[in-house]
Image (cartoon, rainbow, N blue to C red):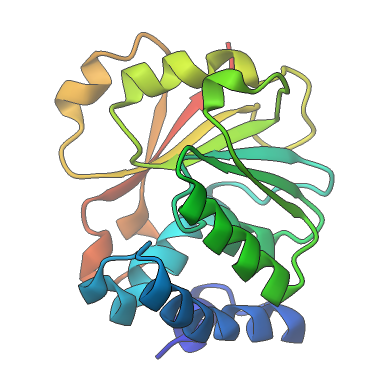
Length: 209
């Protein structure tokens, strides 16, 4: 049950999108054997724990063409690569401080023909550009993360929600969110996906002030 799991929740995928999502299994198995970017026990659950999880953000907002998105600490390309497949007219900048992970991202993006991805080994603090949204998947606690990315977001956007941060995180976040001075909204992914894995998974949305 690979691409079928994605089609279950996103039934309107084009043939090209379906082909790209289908190709991820072989690509990640191949690259993971050379450079470990996904834990060994997770590779068999790639579509649920990595691809569909990344696409939780697509349940919160349908990015408009021309939107610019920064994926911080992308690791092997999550959530950026699945979202780049989902939104081919949106520009994604995937960054990570670990070069071998970025190599995997570049190779997967090239193999898929994704021209809307730029992958770069760089620390987010070094970036000079700004974006509509910053996305990430549980890189660190939210408070320090917001400190890194707060000034990487510009104000003017054309999406249905204000520009800001979309952060994938799981578990009990009460203590962590108490450290965040910004307004935020929590979206429970269990409202969108029925698999038990998503019971405690959330998207935290912090709009730009």
